[in-house]
Each structure stands twice: as C-alpha cells, then as structure tokens.
Length: 450
Image (cartoon, rainbow, N blue to C red; front, side):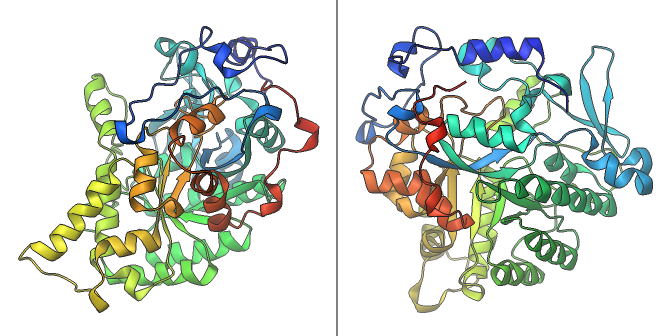
C-alpha cells in the first residue's frame, strides 16, 4: 500500500496538534473552528469542555456509520478477467487526480479519504478530487483503522463503502452484481482482521430480488453483519412490492439489519445510457447542493412504502436502518404518517389491533446521526433506543478527530442512560458487538489523538 504522503502528514499535524498532557478541547478553540450548535432552546446542550485525550473521556462510542476507501485493486484483481475495462478501475487525469471508471464512465475520485478533519481547520481548502496515494492509510488498512478510531474514542465501527455505493448508478445489472460480490468478499477479509471491532455491511443489488437474497446469505456467512439496499429505486419500483418479501424474510432468517444509506440511488437498468448520479458535482454547484440538502426525501419515501404496505406486520422482527441522513426529519415524518393514516380519505393497507405507522417506527426502524443539532430532541421524541451515532470516518465531512467533542455536545441534554444507549448500547445490540469492548485498551490510555 502507498505510504502517507508528506502533504497528508502536514495536514494531520495541523488537524491533531501534539499537545501537552494538560491540553483539552476547551483550550483548542483558538486553533480550530468550534463545533456549531443550533439546537432548539428546549434541548440546548450544556457547554462542553471534553478533553481530547483518551484518558479524560467520560464515555466511548460505536460508530454506526463509518466507511472504507477501496484501494484500486479491489475490483481489478477480481473482475478484470471477465469484465476487462468495464470493471471498476482507476485512471489519472491531466491534473494529476485519480478517478474511478466503471463501464466506460467516470464516477468518483479519492478526495473523500484525503481530507479527514480538514473542514475543522480550513473548510475553504476542501477539494473535489485527489489521488489515491494521499488517502489516509487508516481508510484501507484494518490495523490502522482500528488504532485511529480507538484514539478518537470509537471502539468499533460499522463499515460502509465509498466507491461501491456509486455502482448503483451503473445500468448493467450483471456488472453491478459482480461488483457487489467482489466488494463483499474484499470487505469480509478486511473485517476478519478485527472481527469484533470492524462490522461490515454487505452491498446488495435488488434488480433481481432472489439474487440479492442469496448474496445476503453468502455475505453473512462470510462474516458481514448487515446488508445495504439502495435508498432510491428506479421509477416504477417500490419497496411496497410484495416480491421483496423474499429479501425481508432472508434478513430476518440470518438475523441482520438492512440499511438505507444516503446517496444510494439505483439507476434504471432498462435504459442503457450514461449513469446519472443524484448529487454528483456538475458545472453548476447548485443542483448538487440541493440534492445533498434534500437527501432525506429518499429515505422517507422508502420507509413510507415499507411501513404503509404492511411489511413490518408480515415480518415483525425485520430491522431497517437509516444511515447518514441525520435525524431532524423524523418527528415530522412520523406525525405526517399518523395523520395521513387516520385523517385522510385515501385508504390503503390497514394495520391490525389499531396500530399506527409510528408504532412500527419505534419498533423496527433505527436512525443514525453524525452531528445533527436536533439529535437530542429526536431521541426524546421517538425514544433513545432507536437512535444511533456515527463518525463517518474517514470522509471529509466526517467528525474525526473530534468525534468525542461533537457527540458530547449533541447529546448533552440527555440523561446518562440515554447517552450510553446512543453511544454504544444500541449499535452493539444491532450489530452483535460484544459488550466487553466498551473500554479503551490500556495500551492507549492517556494517549493523545494522533
């Protein structure tokens, strides 16, 4: 693997200065931008003076939303013999940046893994493209991954991809299936080095539901801990379709949750043309910014279809996770579902025993936030038992190396029990992470974040 470049080392020094042992976050505000909170007055967080050194922390966290940055050989080693240059591979452009190409189309660069923490010190310097050699080693080396996250107070991580999510925009079904299988095999090996601390999420293509169900069974058999289905389906398809019962039943049978992650929009495989990726950067930044700011539309659509069609009645132990959509949208959405179900003339499926849509949200749905200032209010509204937290490491919009500070600020209005559930308890139960991990190893005690 490529070593960390000199430029990245300089960024790391700027992001995580080596302080004296008495240094804490409160003393660092002059060196980096403060965490901005716009919480509502009823749940306004108390001021936080959380120290950045591991030994001074009051709690540890499990990140229910973290990522890997896939190395360039993930798919070329596994697919190039069959698919040639249609398989995902990396090319360098005239500006010296590396880009993924899939089925003849350019998709994603590596900037998401080269700017970890930069937004806290110089957000105006964030870039859209970079090269793989500048990617943080922890993003693709499992030992470094665990070590860096432990130093950030994160004892275990639920791992999503970066590039593989872009493949939902590829229209060739067989190629998408192949990339999912190859990625899942690579991720299983990555997680096997630290199986209790690294919990991988299998990628599933739902063009053919039987194929998706079989891949989920195979991936869980390899040690992965969850499955991901696209949050946005092509026009004309919906998760209300009873054909999805096969996938729901398999998820229950293998006892893993299914995730709806931001940015996973399935292209229509019946329209063979260049992929369209919602939110992708174009000549004008405005459409991309709008897509990012309204991304919760897609998860509300998917959850609404699942709930209103009675999926959770037919599969009462099915678990669905909203990942990286933040959580402020949820209380209004729940109220609107109950209102629509009880007050509107249009009638669809009717639930047994007087149940309401909100009952299934509280029983079958988990929502994950990173830095949503309304997180405490949402936890008080729907119950802290269904709220997860994630750092989004190592992405440029993630929280490393200030995860502890952000989490403490966003959950300050909650009682210790609720905070503990969100920090570790909920994710540990959902992803089968041992409770014995709920302490920073002694080898890291008293060490500062590097």
